[in-house]
Image (cartoon, rainbow, N blue to C red; front, side, top):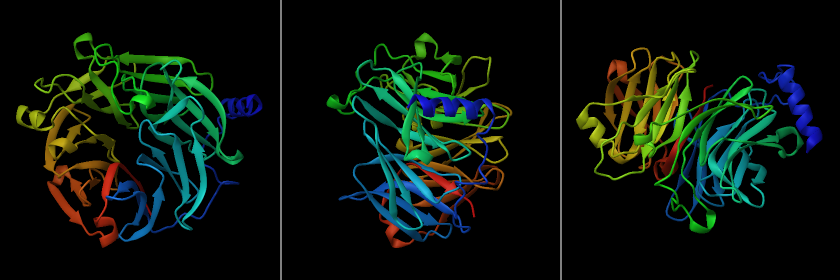
Length: 370
């Protein structure tokens, strides 16, 4: 493992983690694909549809997954187990064959999110070390059967979604301690300390970390997206009394404190203390934040740091930005798919074939444009 780690560090130093044009290049479809974890009453699935809503693959998963990440060159989808699951299922969505089932290893579990580096060489995931209860960021070598090469600290408890920015990784530490023998029970709500951590991926050095004010320590930082200007849009999940009325969206820019944004009171109340996913549009100006418990998708202006509008979507959570400014695709747990353009007040339900429409789409969705 140490030899592979040194090679990884060498690639980082040489600036080689760029989109690949060589050995890993594949033959991904030009028609575009949507991927999501999904479930029916009997089985959990990896679901792949094309841009017309026609099912291309329904692949059975051993347990429920959370996020599905697409490889940047190969036609591979990596479905990451829902916390506290132990698998990442990598599937070739053109052939329907398993590429690899990755096990978290003894004493560890996944937190539902992973990503591929832009060159396709490395798979990076958030994980829990059971012995210490501390979060970790784990790097695996795709070209060597996904062999684990490095573990670095996430500098918090309960790391969830992660983003790459060059040679650094940005981690949303949710702050919630769990253990597999206690299921999804939250064990530290009184003392939780969520944070956003910027970490050098090669050395594991903490570059910057911001957290919530003491009175907001139960606002869990879980899901996020980043635009080219460096603004991180964050979806929050409140773990305190349901009678409280907290802000559920935050922004962060390097060198500054977290900035909480608040929707108008009727909208904020309707969000029911739970924001499920965050995505930023192609222009980098508009963020979508889903509130599935409140049956809402909210939209935010990242230039003026303010609420724009909301649109109704029953149990809508999964978000993807399209190649049009201000436009998003939204999936729901009721088997529906929508196109939304908040600046144009467009909310359009898209067709799905009967297979995709019968499934409850899970929290996140990934889009590869044709």
